[in-house]
Image (cartoon, rainbow, N blue to C red; front, side):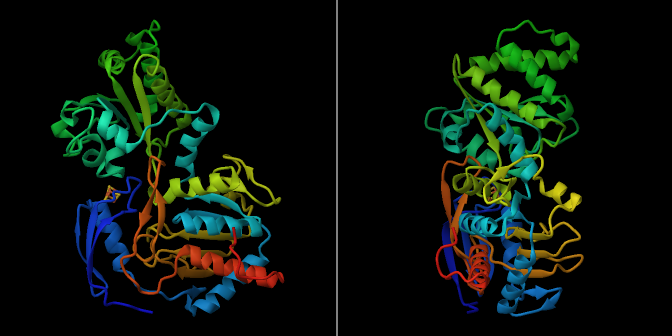
Length: 438
Ligand code: SF4
């Protein structure tokens, strides 16, 4: 039922606007609209406004309005016709992802998240070497030196300084005494306002040179003979100074966002950073803090890993999971025309529309989506944390946070729709319906 009479204040709201998942927002709604927000950043404001400003629940089949029942019929028909579907996007909450895996198992689908490239940059390192990571709470309370690699950590995770790097207080290390080093392409970039008071040490370097610099840093920390002279003078000295500071720190943290490191063989740079943290643990304490989680990529991966035993980029066509981080990349699968149906799931942003492709496309998408060409089927879905309750993993993966419900306008969740589709497929194959799909 449409209910536009909700008029309330909700506190301790978890924001799914990025992987930080700040859980201190206070949101006021009235007459079905967002009236005010406290504690959220500008990105959160855009996230909530984009959801509250879009209330059209009408499914569309080839662009023409339909009822939800007709849309479910059409979706089931397309899935039944498909022999090799691709389920991609996968921006949803825990329940949505659980349902997706059950349906994917039945349909023999291949799975990849829209952020698959960034996810795999980190995952390849975990798969090949393992790493030692920390949590936001540990950084807040214990870090005395934080190395931010790249230049987009704050842009992509806007409250990182306030919530993690320089909070109001820390239990075991004073935030004001914390040393901050910025290693990345800062030349010509203006420091974010919140960083300037921390008086950070700046080591400007292009992303393409990062791999060399990290290798040199590792060698310096390990006490190996290193010819820093082959680098620009300032850079060589700066790296030598940074290596000394890392060795002297009681608890250093090395932080990056894999989404920014869109460079050839970036997994080797990330491997170097992870190994640097490991090496520092011989004499002191150090840990990595890989930032991720935006568009539910950590959530998707957590659920896939605990249910399948594999992360995304996994194919279920042979009745068992086949994980291949290279062959199962969604962009390449579409380009190679390997699938005959695309199911695109994107409940968190109106901007994450599906790629254009030659096969029928089902979109379970944010209610504000606008398409260049109408997909075969579009069903607007509720935004997790606004239209329905759920759970969600933040960047450090340690805990799932509860997502609340802020309005009721009849938008179904991804989990609900996927389960309805699954039931139709079961019923078409003569199986009893009604059980949990996964
Ligand atoms: S930093 Fe991220 S999680 Fe926190 S309020 Fe902003 S968008 Fe939301």
